[in-house]
Length: 88
Ligand SMILES: [Zn+2]
Ligand SMILES: [Zn+2]
Image (tube, rainbow, N blue to C red; front, side, top):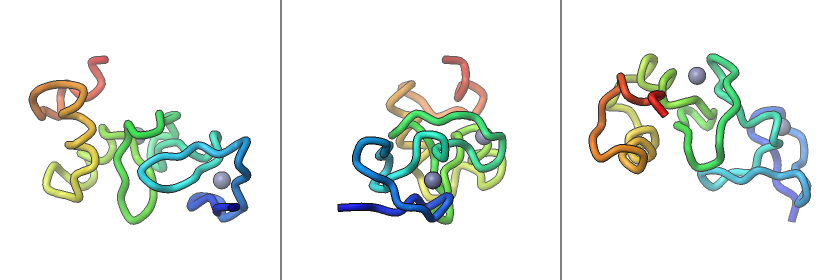
């Protein structure tokens, strides 16, 4: 089955797809839509069907938005604090 990349709208074929948060991306498309940082599948936030790094996500939408960033973050650290998001 061919999925469509939510970023560029082109088909994503099995061999090249990068699956994250239930969507298939091209490896090059899976980057923060704000700072263009390359993202790791499963370790980024999502808003309006677009991927963001947790840092930009929190900056733009705050910790009260849809909580992928916080879920992800709580897997990195036992607490949820914006200032340690990229201490890794
Ligand atoms: Zn794409
Ligand atoms: Zn970012």
